[in-house]
Length: 240
Image 1 (cartoon, one colour):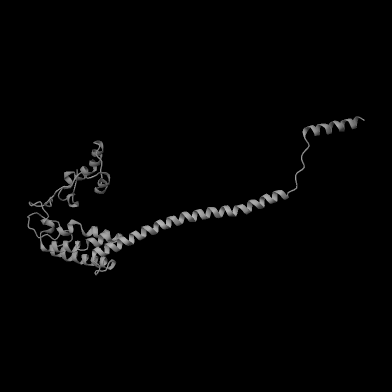
Image 2 (tube, rainbow, N blue to C red; image 1 turned 60 degrees about the vertical axis):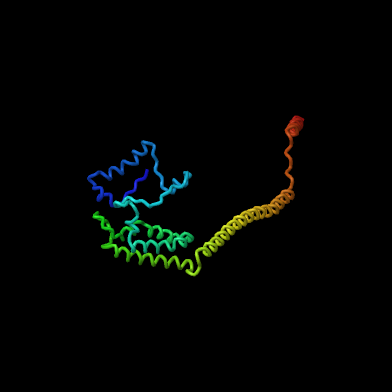
């Protein structure tokens, strides 16, 4: 079961008088009582194995009568922005820059393209901060242009994706090999340190043993029998 809601549903599509907020507050507790758990798509993919492929020949959506993607890719502006964005998809996938990956996710947000729609459906459309689809397109393309420059700065334009992929794979493999060698080196350094400690301890132990030998032997205390005999002798001498 999935619940997909835009933020505009809270207080706009669903007025607060409909108790939409109370519904969302109660939902987790009700689900817990029924033994229902929550998971993100990534968690589900990691926990469960797919059974087979799902054939979806035509993309579907929840908007307009067509229930298709025309609200996002229905005009020239939207398709131009979409195609330019995904022209660098392979290079973004290959890179390891966290900020590039993060901005890539932001740029793929569906509302970026929906703000550019020119469809006349008779239904009010929230365009966010934009007055028109053309304003949305202009702003998005400016941001996208800066993003593509950052991607190109990481990887030269004259290197094709296949060659770039090969180079990055080689670099990653070398990095993994270096990590393994560093681990092996750390093990040997630990062994050498232990052996060095043993070597340093041996002379100290020999000196201690030699010092013990040089010490004068302690006089043995007379045994109990000798002490008793000594006392008897003194007693006899006193009596005499």
